[in-house]
Image (cartoon, rainbow, N blue to C red; front, side, top):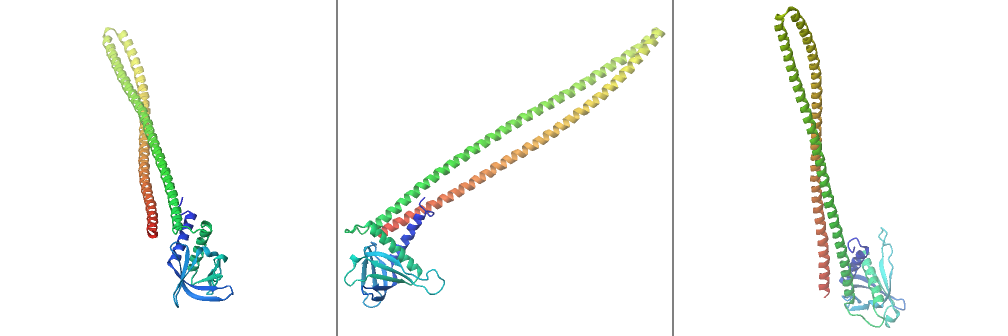
Length: 356
């Protein structure tokens, strides 16, 4: 993507800064060497014309006449700096412009030396002139000069192409974000379906426990009915005993015999009733224990279901907060990208208006 991270785009912006600095003008020490090897030093103000075709300079002392040199006449730029990377005070920032043989006049120097006062001026003039000389040698015909604004148009076209590439890349990023949002929505819908399935399973488990409780209640009712039946049987036995006593009056022998049989039957019935009561008590205790266990299990299961429900609600709430935070960050990022794009377009428009 053509932007802050693109090395070609950053190089383009750096060259543009150099060229703008050259157009603004810089005081430099001119060292001219003629064909006889004689040097001439002058303090002059150098600048590049708006059409990026000529170098002009004016002597700060004396007549102050303006001299000019076509950039197409420069054959090579040589960096003659010394001590640029040292921490000492012995620095010398200078470049030499070697001129083409066919561009030299009778009294014209063989080369021009530009001595800079700082390393920033050295970098601006060295890199800016190299770019202009290379572009002039590659793009200009040998015998025909292009229009004055050809260089500006070419730079504007390059900037427009890079902005178009950046716009296409931003659209691609928006598409990928939309796909990511759709995938998150599908995952959220799937998670909701899983929670509903879990609720249905929990309901089935609750129905099963309800059936178990109903069965236990029916068993208890059955035992109570059995107790009532035994009580009625005991009442019948007592009535038989009473009947036996009444029949005693009819005969001593038959009465004594019947009484003995009734007593034996009563003793047997008492023993059976005691055994049955003991068995019933044991069964009641077992039922109570089972019911207590079932209630404990039901409470534990209810607590577990409540904890799971609270966990699901908490996860859903955290997910919504996370999505809201991501949406806010995404909107802020899109706003920054949109402002950067508008700023670039505004700079390009201002540059075009300024050049026009």
